[in-house]
Length: 99
Image (cartoon, rainbow, N blue to C red; front, top):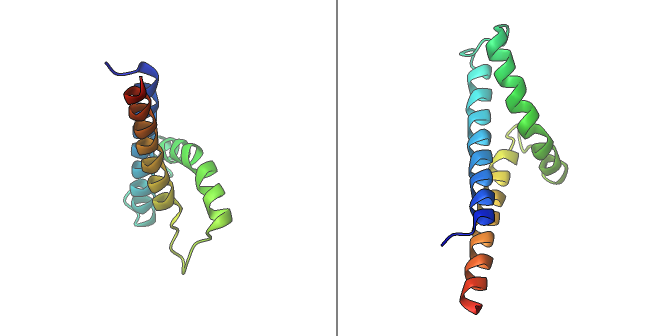
């Protein structure tokens, strides 16, 4: 039986991974002029995604600034989230086998 707290943590990590992916794709769409930020709905979506991801990205950019105009912070955050997810699973499974 799965622990509901572990399940919730895994789902929140998964949800945030999707938010990051959508934010990256949306930033590309805005940069290429596909999404119009003068549209109220488009602007609201971009603002939400920016508010949800920028505080985390900013912390990564303080350590690793953009290299040659390429911002690696989303990739680094995705790798760290995947590491966290696997670490939670490992610790939980290790705990179960010790019982």
